[in-house]
Image (tube, rainbow, N blue to C red; front, side, top):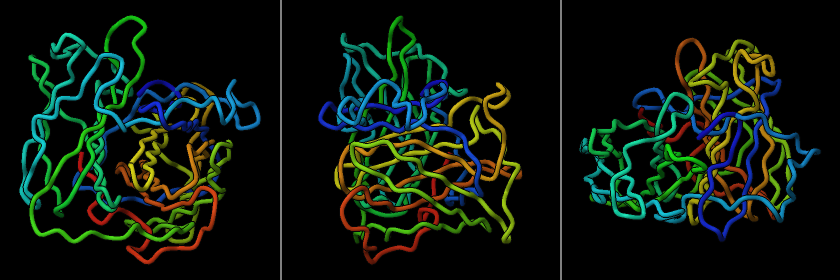
Length: 320
């Protein structure tokens, strides 16, 4: 995670770029969380507008992330690969370097050394967490996953090493218990949660930059006083249905730097790595609380909604 807007990258097979620019609109709706999300990744540097291209085309975008457990000599060592659904458990892991040593020095990005995302394979459960690191390099945080099934753990970080780049490593996590998979929530342009309504405008296109605007309103009135959260006005995580390719974006500029102003909406410039369905999780802060809105969108092809959970926040949100 870093300054401005940046796509967390993984796996060389997928190309995806999400560059964000803070925009005008009405906003986002909250996703239920066990505790308010605390994330901010390395993506706060101002990013080019879609028409500027940022120096790359749809064929030159960085690869999507989260699909591999090792990259650039670093490995995610998940010490707790299994938990019991509905039971609070300490999730423990270590980032190891090419020599097998635990990494104990990280660059702080958006107030945190590392950002952790846990998502269910059906993209219904989502958590954005910030674990605690012990002196020996072991990270840990209590989690309580509501349903049995397969989950993916994403660690987003940048080692404190010269020329090190931001990495997002992924590993599988299993939650035991009676399992009943759910269908991906249907595609929709609106989400309601915690008294907010979030409206999504724009289309996600494979291999081509496009603008996504999210407008927040409450009781029918635009929300125009969004608050900075960990150095940004909004955070977007996108997961591709099927393989859970991970993309993480932030708005362009940082609060107070003169390039952005609080407003009723947030605008992102995004390029999907491929056609297919994606689940977008948008976090914003208002009234001193962090909220998350979740949308299912389709890049390319038909946009017919699939039966499933209504749009809004993930059924259990995310804990931080």
